Image 1 (cartoon, rainbow, N blue to C red):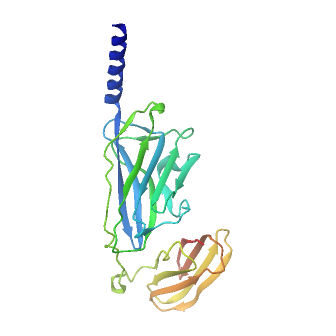
Image 2: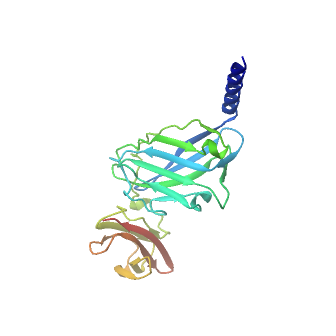
Image 3: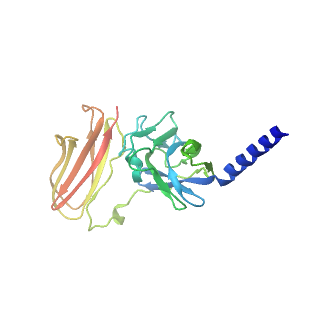
Length: 266
């Protein structure tokens, strides 16, 4: 009889622990910008508040329509949000041709990132669209947030998959450009090997300089150096003799200066 009481008490404790567990939801927030498809992972609690101590998330995507390098580069291929960028353990990898794995351990300083019923952004991933007629086919394969040993007994709630059409990728027509603004566009493709195109727009006649630099500020290549009429331009950059890595391209015209990054991947 005493044994039966012990078993009954254990069952009650188990049920109570489960009922008090907070439910955490996740979702894909997406944006198409030119030839880039940006995927942001966001989480929130259905009620109350807590902290995200350990995060183990993995999702798959349509590798026939979207491209990201096999060795993703931080702040180029992905960006960590909030204090997720400040912790020692940051493992963002591509274990398969069509999957992304995010492992974050938010111990130490600063304290674990707080989460509540509003969206908390974890990471944004930047994919190059290789087939504008395809779909994204985003599917969760792992969603573990703050395991029980952190005394935060979360349960997985609503984590919907997303199969979004990429067909709304648009090419800006010349007539639609704001003739009063300078524009330096992201090179395409990016990453690339060895050729890429850089497009820019100047609203008035004037001197134009477009130069490639390495991350130390050394001049690598001069793509444009001369006077140009107002209009749209594109120039091809051949990186055949350069090693893999992150480089900077800088456009200067009259008083306008803009800098962007590109990635050579061989």
